[in-house]
Image (cartoon, rainbow, N blue to C red; front, side, top):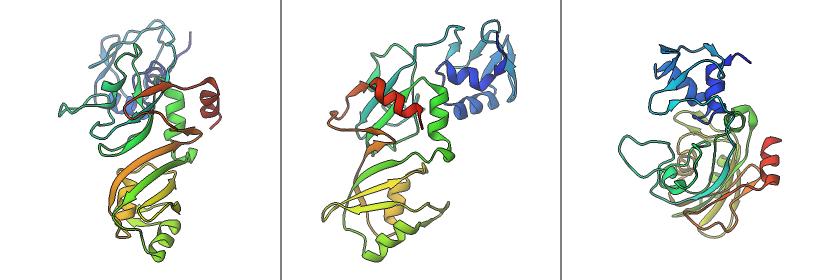
Length: 235
């Protein structure tokens, strides 16, 4: 039996990403053997009773790992639960028996590729800034940036929360841009384009690392292939 950090145990059992598990612990929503846990606590999943508010008791059994690609429609929030009772991306995968969670976020009005899993270790690697995982977006805009604006995007834009990393930008046609970034700030692509006077009319993520959205219908999901899972594990 192995003693592990509590957030690692929770993430490996599909509660949420490691970071979110730390937030749950810090907010007092996790108990070990009836006592409220603190960050830094360790436990043995085989012998300790671990309970999470709103989740229940963790099973000592190793869960079956699930990896899904969802083509997220507009109007759905990327969260497990929403306090305002708006539809969430988990409403679209209700037939999956395992408890899964989204990897990262797409804002409510953004469509496209979203990964859902219960693999906490993989989620941690994909979301960590050092991973530099590329995210590719197709943006329809009211007007294209000027040549100078395109240069600004490619060099990095100063937003209210600091400078962005340089983006790869390709003009697709007279109303579409393809942008590649590796950061994950809130509404980042929309804010970057607004900074160069281009309003986003529609935004779709078409690639995440080695995963490509392809022709998956909007609102549908599929299980990743073994090759796709292996490619993610190599990141």
